[in-house]
Length: 244
Image 1 (cartoon, rainbow, N blue to C red):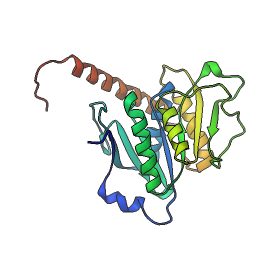
Image 2 (cartoon, rainbow, N blue to C red):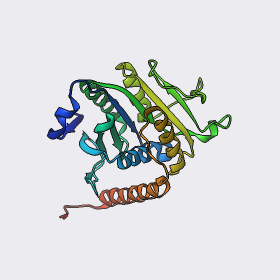
Image 3 (cartoon, rainbow, N blue to C red):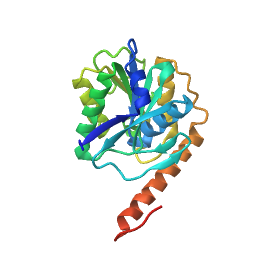
Image 4 (cartoon, rainbow, N blue to C red):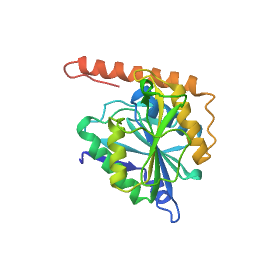
């Protein structure tokens, strides 16, 4: 197989390619504060979006989980058709060698379906906070969105797969907004995810309430713990096993 492949369920292919559609992509990763994953999973759930496919990588984590919509996989694609939104939920981080191929595959696929703009969620170390602002932001190619709050300052780095994805979307000339709420790097931070969602509500008018985010984030943390335990057990086990 290719290093990264995007699989879309057949019944949704035609919808994605309907003339006149101009899609907006929302995504993030489980980085600082797990902001990207908490926010995108919550948005996908609250908007009653439909899972339409998966991103499959050569070395993706070997786990699945059962959800109300079916099988949760490491990298999922959801559709909110009535709002022209595509939500990519990354329940895991692509391995370092896969991050460029992952970003290229997602950017190329998004352009093929007439994707127009993207919004990425990330976390910014709270130690960099200079005033009373809740977040920083940056926008490439005059993406069409802006806020009164300060942009990301000169000399501040974005790191990890979010940086790679932002760089590739810029190279592919996809207007992209990056929203970075302040957060504690090593903790689940639903309040930071709520900042991202409120800002998204401002620019996209999607009306997603953050009232249930605290409880939802507890479920995300619990699921993440189960995945980590399952992964650890898999590595520890030796010899052939039979699994149900």
